[in-house]
Amino acid sequence: MNNKINSPEYINKLVPYKSGNSTNNNISRDEFKTFINLASNENPHGTSPKAVESITNAIKEISIYPDVKSTKLVNKLANMMDISPDEIICGHGSDSLIGYIINAFSDLGDEILTAKGTFIGAYVNTNKLGRKLTTIPLVNYSFDLSNLLKSITEKTKIIYLANPNNPTGSMFSKEEFLNFFAQVPKNILVLLDEAYFSYCNDFSEYPNGLQIFKELSKEEKSNLIIIRTLSKHLGLAGLRVGYAFGDEDLINVLYKVKLPFEPNLLAQEGAVGGLDDDEYIIKAMQSNKICIKLLVDTFKSIGIEYVEPKANFVMILLKTDLQAQKFVELCLQKKVVVRYLAGFGINNGVRISTGTEEQTKFACGIFKEVFDLVKYIL
Image (cartoon, rainbow, N blue to C red):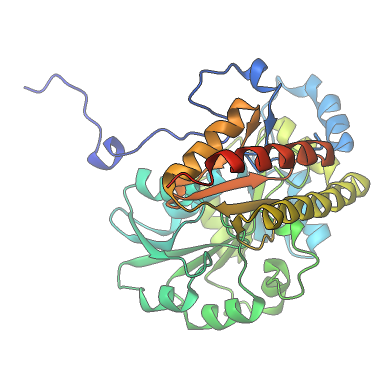
C-alpha cells in the first residue's frame, strides 16, 4: 500500500515561477522598493489616477462577490473596441487567460506549438496542464512563422504567438501574420498575445489584432483569440487584469473553464476607471519612447548588441552566458535590477525594462560601469 500522496509526473517536473521582482539575495519587499527595478516590464509611472479613484470608491463593496462576467468592464472594452461584448472575456492577466485557453481547447497529451524564447507563461501553462510543449527556434530573435507552419502535426491544437515578443522585443508584420494565419488549418487555434500592444502605435507594420479581428469574416477568424493585459497599459500589475477577444463561440467555451469571480472587484473597477485616463496613458507612452532611446543610445555607445525594441524593454546580448550572469549580478549590487533570460532559453540575454526618465538615465550610467567590468569575461 502506498501511503504517499503523489503528483503526476508532469507536475513533478515543474519549477516554481521566479518573477523579475525576485532575487537570490533574500531581499525583503520593503528593501526591494529602494532598488530601481527594470526587470519586470512594469509601468514605472505608478497606477492611473482615474484607476486609483475607481478602486478607492469600490473598496466599500469588497464584502460582495464580483460580477462573474465583468459586465461593466466588458461593456467598456466593447464600446472602445467597437465589437460585441459577447466576443470578450476578462481574467487575471495574460497568464490566467493562457491557462484557460489551453485547458478549453486542448486535451492531455495534445501539442501546443510556439517558439523557444518567448513568454514563460505559455510554457508553464502548457506543462502544468499535461500538454506537450513543442518549441521552434527563433530566427534573429523573432518568431519563425514559416517554420512554425512546417512543424504542425496531427497533435497540434494551439499555436501561441507573442507580438511584440517577450523577452526579445521583436515584432512580425501584419503581412507576415496574415500570410501565416491563412495557412493554419481551421481546427488549430491561433493564440495571439498582444500584452504590449499599447507601445506599438508608431509602427505602421504592426498587425494590430483588433483591426485584423474586425476585418476578417466570422469563418476566417473562427480559430483566432487575441489576449491583452492592462498591467502595463494602466499600471495595474498588482491587481492582475487582462482580457481576451475572439469569436463568441470560443468565448462561450472559455466561460466554462474560467474561475467564476475573476478578475476581482478592485481589478474590474480599476480597469473601468483607468481606461478613461487618456492623459496618463499618453504620458506613459511618450516617456517610454524617450527611455527606449536612452537605453538604445547607451548600448550603441558602449558596444553592447541588442534587439531592436518594439515594446517597453530592450533585450541585450552579451558574448557569453557567464558575462550575462555577471552583468545582472553587478547591476543588482548597484541597486539596479535587470532580468537574466536563461529561464526563457536565451542564456546570454538580459532584458531591461524602461523606468522613469530619471531612473533610466541613472541606470544607463550603471550599465556603462558594469559593462567595463564584465566585457572581458569569456
